Length: 325
Image (cartoon, rainbow, N blue to C red):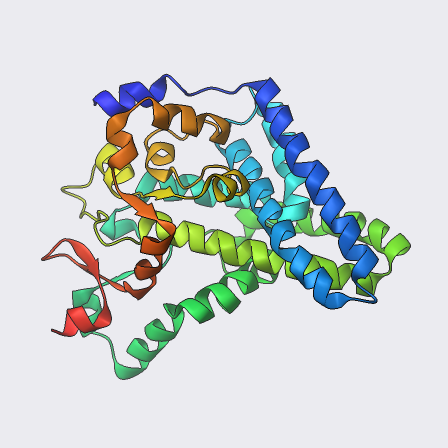
């Protein structure tokens, strides 16, 4: 595939650019967190406002962790592992467990028979029609954007990820990553709380993680839950087609693109996950075809929240109303 050959030119880490990205993320993050501590006791409304850019910087940290999990951020496995685990203290996401789940997501994205790992649960129209009234109500609640991104995804990041259960692998396979991060967080935040006060620390960390997880959940949703996405059964599924046509190009404002580590260029990322985020834009600029494929603007993306079911007959995601028509 011509596009795969083009993308392959941009794979591989640039350690200098990686270090620059860490610095340009950490410095403003520390400045914002400092300002949050200065306002938390007297002007908490300002603390919550600061949590918005602060949370976006946590998203940027998550993209760094994400690239480390793919082995693309630094040029050595040791550096990627060290950095991935360090950033997990900020993203509160177990590095080893997430890396395994995300690798499975890449290997099965768009595969109807392998749904359910590292993705948003999506039913087909036929599966929806076969549900009981209770099952339909539960799915409607799950796919409600206010509940999903306002409560569900933050609850998953802050609570579910603290336990070795509730994951697609056995406790034996997950406990080390989960409990290892929990122990690291106790030491890390315990030491900070000694100087800042644990109450102040909680009322700063909570909104930061809440904003980051809600925004990150929305980004992940839009990356695959757009109308003309691709889902295939086993006989028709191929990795390259699913990666390229089942992933969106989220064309964000340059500032939002910076905060989100260009993860909106998701069609490129799925086609070649060894391209670090700081080289995705270079890859996009080199291909006129990639610049128009599956393109969604911020305004257009809000319509994706209405899409709920995969219509295999018409080969697109549809609303509940469209499925009933």
